[in-house]
Length: 212
Image (cartoon, rainbow, N blue to C red; front, side, top):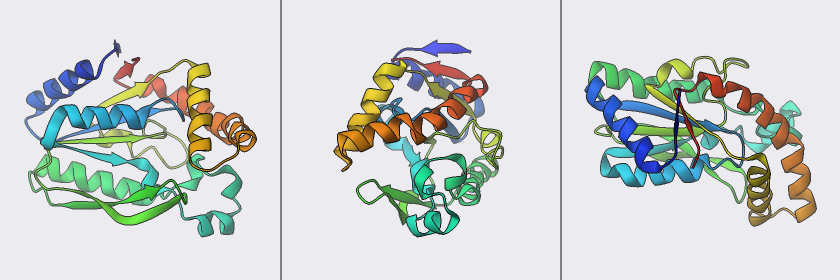
């Protein structure tokens, strides 16, 4: 397991894998809340250019009303608060098209952070996309129904960041999207941190570590 310290290094690693496989590649970027997965994934797609597309896992959050029905709203973001089946279905469609060279457009939900709700059909991965960068918390998890995700990826990365920096970024993000400072800190140190413990343990399943 190597440690990569720049977006260019990550992009070069992806390029090498794609050349070796000679087809579309699915890339997974995992990490704890606040580690910078989204920022890194967006920068990576920008570096790779028009041949790449981004698929955030956040679109597969269960809707708020469903979380309330299940009694899970107070721990939104936990492994069992996502539509895992829907997520796996999209990954398998992308991977199957790659392997059999029968790529078709694949649609997926997006996520509106201002209202914390998924947005159906907001993302389309075009048939000619050569690199699909998927980012999310539980891509490397083998429990809670997530075990089917890891085998779909051709290449995986785990984003590692100092906890103090990660937590402050997370608190700042919660405040930016409407929480008070006190509520943001409580959520970051409560539900988010419980999830972070689960996620950090999955780093051993990654092919590479990203430390920028």
